[in-house]
Every structure is written in structure tokens, then in C-alpha cells.
Image (tube, rainbow, N blue to C red; front, side):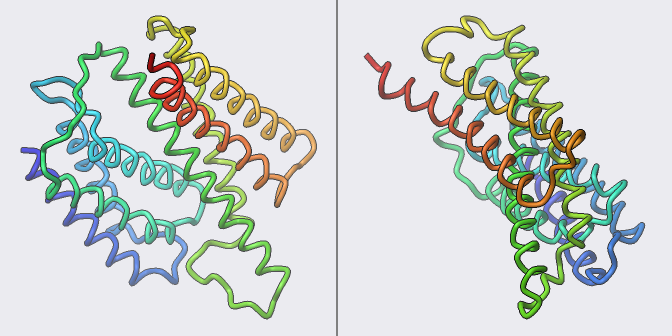
Length: 262
């Protein structure tokens, strides 16, 4: 069943990519391309569920996590595309989903990580992955926004034709930050509620840095609302907050696997 779902999603994404490429001069996808995209996203989500839930337990292998992240990335843009003309960003995201699905179809089954988790902890894991995905997309978006700003200030440079206008990209960045912040808040809250020994040495570094990252996102969004922070200020704060988030994950892994190994 997983193989059939993965191949179906792969074909739908490939079709949607071809349709979107033909329509790249239009800010919004046609109804046909939209329905193909939504069908691909839905079947990809079912594929992720099939990969995740196994007889041995919860599969948290790289292939499974990569597919969950790919679904979250496309879902964020699909959500933003309801209000913003950002259809061309699918051209960058569909290949990521296609590669993740190819890995699911072709990767050998060995080396998987199986965990016995309760339903609440599975929800925490999925929310956390979705939050990281949305905020990772926001960080990448902020870098593209900085590149666009530099091109605007240097008219001699060629225009980045596939990207939406600068104002749209900035609105998209803020939308992604709000989506990511809501998911990150839910992730932190569910961690407090459902994780045992959350304040042990193994998890404390992760909790502190993740909370700092959350505070920076709140600080920037508050500053944008009251003081109109935008442009390169938005880029800097977004990258600082995401760096703390990444450091929280990598730092906790380093502390757990090397410092506290004894």
C-alpha cells in the first residue's frame, strides 16, 4: 500500500510541476493545477502516515522524517496561496517532495529508527516537525527576500523572474512566521504536557534554546505590529530565531550523545 501511495503522489507532483511551469507567468495556479496539487498533497500525507505507523512501532527514519517535512512545506505554501499570489514557489518545493518520495520508493529498509510512542507523543512529534518545517521555510524565505532587496537596490542586476514581487514575499514571510509560531507554541506546550522528565539534563538545553527562539519570534512579530519592522530587520530577526531553534536541536543531540554519554 505504501508503494502504491508513494508512486501515485510522485506522479501527481510531477504533473503539478509541469502544469505550474507552463503557468509560471501567472501568479496563481489554474483550477486544474490547484486540484492536482491538493490531491498530491493529500496522498503524500497518507504516504507519510503509512511510513510512520509500522508493526514494529513509529518509524522515525530519515526517509520518513524527510517526507513529513516535504508535506509540511507544501502545506504551508498552499495555505499562504489562499491569500497571496505565491504559486511559483511550488516550482521550488515540488522537486523536494518528488525526491523525498523517490527515497521512500527506492531507499533500502535497513537502518530505521523505531520508537514505541503513545498517541499524544506521536502528535507532539508531528507538531514539532511541522513547526520546524514552517520556520525553516520562513528562514529560506527571508534569505530570498534579502536577495530580492539587493536586486531592487541594484537595477542593473537581472530580475528574479520566478519569485513573486518583493511586497508579496514579505507578506508571505510574516504569514509563515505566524504559522510556524503557532505550531512551535503547540509543540512546546505538548512537550510540557506529555514528555516525561522534560527538565532532565538531556532535554534542558533543548528546552532553553527552543524557548529563546520562541521569544525572539514573538519579539519580532510584536515589533513589526507596533513599529513596522520589515525588510532586512525582518531577515535578521528571522535568521537569529531559527539559528537558536537549530542550535537547540543540534546542541541537545551533541550534549546527549557526547557530553553526557558517561
